[in-house]
Image (cartoon, rainbow, N blue to C red; front, side):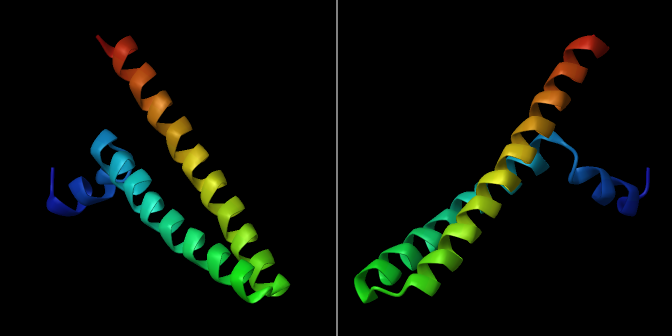
Length: 79
């Protein structure tokens, strides 16, 4: 298997999915900072932007968790 094929498969591997979930956690820190700033400044537009970003983050993380579960169930069936 070439290095390119291994790199393409990394995204759908268990370590790759866990890394993606970890980077989403860092995104949550940024969103929390934006929400705090918006609330302190009483800026409704910035708050709405932060909440939409939070919803996107939650949705993306849920998709990653679902893929991780599917990957885990396929591993059990493969044995």
